[in-house]
Image (cartoon, rainbow over the protein chains, first blue to last red):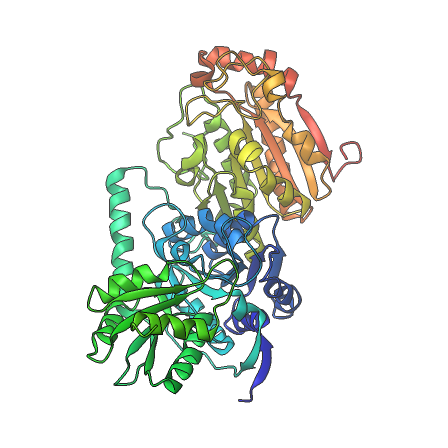
Length: 354
Length: 250
């Protein structure tokens, strides 16, 4: 396989088509526009359907309909647009339908800015819609990884009958990098016997639904969902740990800040300080146990969370570290990307060297 | 003994939850009979709304998909784009379609989506207890318009069948009612025509049905039927507003 130069958003769209996605419903919003634009040209060539909806609300409900009929379907948007999709995402999770949702995050709150940010961490990992539900949330830090995540996301969604979100900051969507197209692992996926495709006169009607008016039935449904989420917690944790045995400081970061942390580690090395990086890849389920173990290493004196938001990831880091080491925050928000020097200085401050 | 009449195979045996005197049951039956008689039922996917007919997915004997409030046309769009050969319909009330879901229905019609919408207009929010709808008549009382709908405060009712007729992608738009047998027969014909035109690929088809809500109108079932005939029809005239099959209607 040869390497090709791809822009993040276009690579994500191409990866979806290669993964068998044949339906895409979206609405324009910066900085993710190249995804629907690419789909509008290339999805019909692959025998699929691209539709620009009247709103993000409509787009996610088109996804809900198409997923119910058994299709491999995707939508993408950016922060304010993802807020509008939350109603539909809650219904998809409640009715147990597989789909892939891409959020190329920009600054907020409100209309915010079109520059990269990570302020949607809580919304993605806590459930931005109503009710007790979970999404599997994958956070790429390179364009290669974004492509691999999209490829895997459709299979994961089908396996669990659950929406999967790709959470990337605007930097990942807008920059160009080398991509090597990796073939899918061949996974055996369950048949979609639940899909609404017409009874054909051979079975009882299928009903796609998230309404359980009897509270006892509703409780059973919630318990069933939670059992499924427990399986995800056990089987879908992903992370990267690059931690030398003598690490003084442990950075925790995802997406673009993880790359900045790597640059900061190189700066700190020149100053005689050893840094390590723990990069959660699945933001939900969060790699709680591996992070606790990494932070517990004897050499580690401080844990520094680097995020392009003002204290969201750090909450999960504190839960995982659970007091074994001090946890501090290096956060930038509103569309500003921290510099490696700022990240390195945050580590120095955490170590009491500055 | 010959069977001269029986329940449609297009409906399940579940007991319906509708109030006495509500005409949702009649409309369900007309839709179900049309799907059976046109031999479409086994290939049909219906989309249920939020409102009084929220449990429609339990009553129609075909594959069903429950939508969020107002989103049925978007859900139906997703289904029909995946399954272009199948029959797809939405069944929506006036709060669902003419308030929270206005954008979805207008744009589904604009795109000429090949599904059928059955729009049940009873001029009130029934399930939530009688609040004012976009179709509530001026002067009509509702729990959120205790002195009657005030034109200066809330404007006038939306006429959805007429609005749909102005949209290029709509092939058929009509308003009917089911308050007596002659009107039921006309409604029956309209619903069949809508499904036929859908399967012929003519475009989006829309049947508005004036319905009763004796519970929230504070009337007996008989009074409610009379109110539709004497008052509601004056605001919402019956007729065909667009028919791509005939020049007069277009």
